[in-house]
Image 1 (cartoon, rainbow, N blue to C red):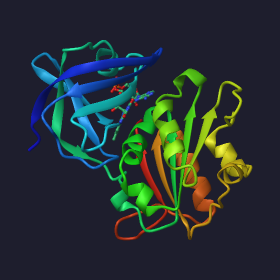
Image 2: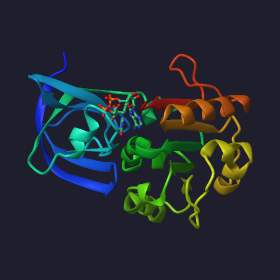
Image 3: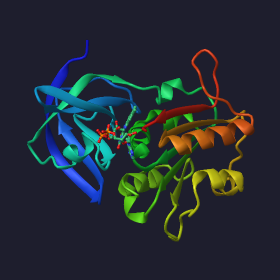
Image 4: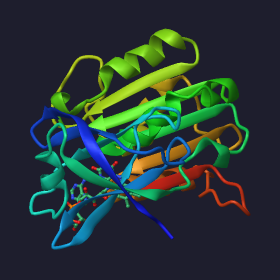
Length: 247
Ligand SMILES: Cc1cc2nc3c(=O)[nH]c(=O)nc-3n(C[C@H](O)[C@H](O)[C@H](O)COP(=O)(O)OP(=O)(O)OC[C@H]3O[C@@H](n4cnc5c(N)ncnc54)[C@H](O)[C@@H]3O)c2cc1C
């Protein structure tokens, strides 16, 4: 059975309106990079909790979550108001299949995120394993406006540490910003822009895709990739597409 651990907020970083990262000090929990934990707050003597991907690596002593506040959401606006020293609850049971050990051996790993779906990919990329296993790693990160493009310092570090192996493709859908693609990820697959920017082809023999974030992007990208001969990954039937829908 899962146990609730009492943690305390170390830092609440507000990136912009409605976008936050919380760092939480708590007894160690076991998880793999890319997995999520239930995070909760007490309400009427019960714990109101939701799953959040962990941005930190399994070796970091401090947990980190990255989230946006949902208008009229029950938990996220309350998490956003937390400050240093405030109590937050963390379940010791973690989960999720968006992990590198689920990925078959292929040369190219594609990580496609909308918004806060960047979280699990940062955790994965901060570990050594993907850099040892894949020849090319492409990170696509789609947000509506430039200010929502979080964790740029971490992403720049991947670029400087692995300049040959790593390609970062930012998408900003509601603003025109130099050096970014201003369409949606789906459009860039349809019109060939994604393959051009990554200098890779979306063939089924050499690619594995991990998709995280909103369900529209995930469903539409999955359909497009399936039309190119790729299929959903299952443990018993290895494929090319792994997904995690946040909502
Ligand atoms: C496996 C998993 C991992 C997740 N990891 C993260 C994470 O790392 N970061 C993160 O921000 N969220 C994440 N989520 C979503 C998160 O668990 C909550 O659903 C979200 O924070 C809203 O909670 P709430 O209590 O404020 O809203 P609720 O009261 O639970 O929901 C209100 C409504 O908002 C919708 N909704 C949920 N999330 C969003 C969103 N981001 N934007 C718009 N509408 C939304 C729901 O579908 C629901 O209809 C994850 C979800 C899952 C299933």
